[in-house]
Amino acid sequence: MNLPLRKPMTLPEFLAWEEQQPIRYEFDGSAPFAMAGGTEAHAIIQTNLAIAVGGRLRGKPCRFIGSDLKALVADNSSRYPDGMIVCSPVQNRRTTIADPVIVFEVLSSSTASTDRIVKAREYQATPSIQRYIMLEQDRIGATIYARAGDTWTFEILSDDAILQMPEIGIELPLAELYEGLNFDIEDETSKEISQSS
Image 1 (spheres, helix red, strand yellow):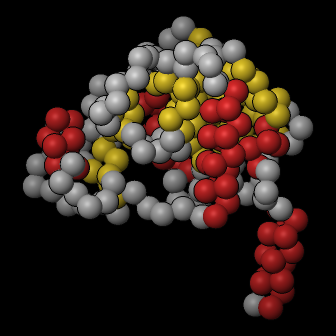
Image 2 (cartoon, one colour):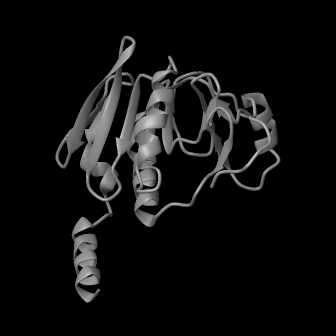
């Protein structure tokens, strides 16, 4: 949902404004956008991500942060990634992260174009971000952008692939992030709905 405003906001104005709101908003550099709810598949992938990555980081200097904190990116945008890896010291009362190392987004039909284009540009313009991982929601799959100087390299993973994150020294089977989801049931339900139409 786009919130109409009389003039573009600055990032400091947005951050002060959002603190007073009952719901969360992202900020694209000029206007706030209300955060939409997700699906059960989205929630399961996000939970699996926190368990799989967070567990592997125990005892290490970096940590997994869920979608409760804002990432300040591209100098003037504020986003709530589905997950991020942060390696800077903990500040207990901090509500924004200015230096994420890895960012995760779980794609949905309503956000995929923003995640693939707009956020990819913002994350690339954020020097601390070394890897941007977009996880598919309706199949086992990921698109990964990794920093290579001033540009990104990209890789597409599916099914039995291993998700490597050398920046933090861990890797894991991509399928582990989809544990508990059954895509065959979704396919059968979709076929039944289309046949009854």
